[in-house]
Image (cartoon, rainbow, N blue to C red; front, side, top):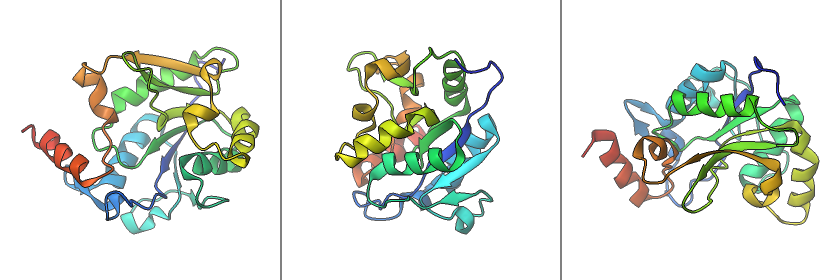
Length: 203
């Protein structure tokens, strides 16, 4: 179990190719700023320290260290293992395509991580109705590096597959609860963007 006052390092995964969107998601504007800048501000507001995985954030005016993936093409798991190995710290990991992510959600996550049971390597949110886990809004611990490496070596890239049930700590939420579900809406494709614009304006 983590010490009560411990704080993980904030990490934004920003190395994706945005192939489904057809343009760079990080530059999409929400609430008057590029998406990467908005997410960075939320993460910094909760944990203070920020690290960016996959690209240099200087072009966005973000002053933060960054790392390219050690092995390109492994998806989010590749970025996570790179940062965990480089920093040796527990990392609060979020993807850069979450326009409605908020500080309250991340505060709940950090609080759950601080109380996680021994052996939990992934602290995250879970949808009650489906069992789906929000693997890209989660805290990962450096003790999980060997497992990440082993699974990636055999071709397993799904974070929910790499970290099975006994290695997870959850905050459950109901999909019908829009206040809880809204922060996890991610913008992956043009139809997602249309929906997100409606959510942004309240229409």
